[in-house]
Image 1: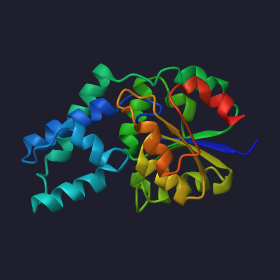
Image 2 (image 1 turned 180 degrees about the vertical axis):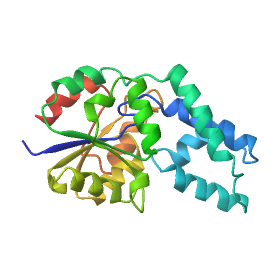
Image 3 (image 1 turned 30 degrees about the vertical axis):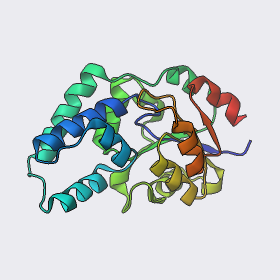
Image 4 (image 1 turned 90 degrees about the vertical axis):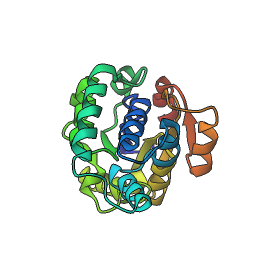
Length: 217
């Protein structure tokens, strides 16, 4: 077997959160003077850290978002996730079938990632091996987060397999020297998603988590 560690992205890979997240961001940004649709949030910010997205928005606005913005969006996201968030289809049975060490490397904050995993009963599968872009200098598409996760797990980058659903995630994993599979089975994925992930450098793509154990073998 080529791998000693599987690194999972969280949003769109473990939890089917991207549609909810894009809608919340669109609502909040629009309410604070930056009109944008959920579709445009998806196209521009999917897979990137909230810090990077906020920096870009504030640069275009020419001023910082209000101090209350962060608190408001976290509160709304928590409510929506608690009401609506579901695990990605078949992820529980897939994780149970995998024998390799696993961890999570997400662009979300640690608090949000841990909350999402708890809501979907996935937290105990990974804890304490849950890593966030807030722990490194540069988030995806930089390789920093993937290299940090591999170092924490004491596994060489070349022996890591990353499961990602976004172009920034694919790009970052490749830059880290890791193999990456592109997952396009989330509810946010478009018909051309597999082609986009392949173009970004995914070694393989799949849309059903039940395929993953066989692909690793």
